[in-house]
Length: 69
Image (cartoon, rainbow, N blue to C red; front, side):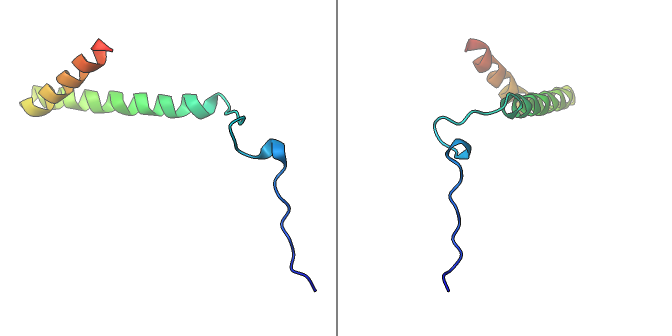
């Protein structure tokens, strides 16, 4: 008796150079990243008001670098 064999996936379903992503596969992670970044920056601003200058200076430097590009 022979062992069962697995059939290969259909060529159109195989992942490769021609594979296309749906729009939400790029948009949703980008929105999540932006939302989390906004939360972190808002918390950093609140901490800067309480006297944490190191973190505030680092975030300000990052903002300046982002503004240049």
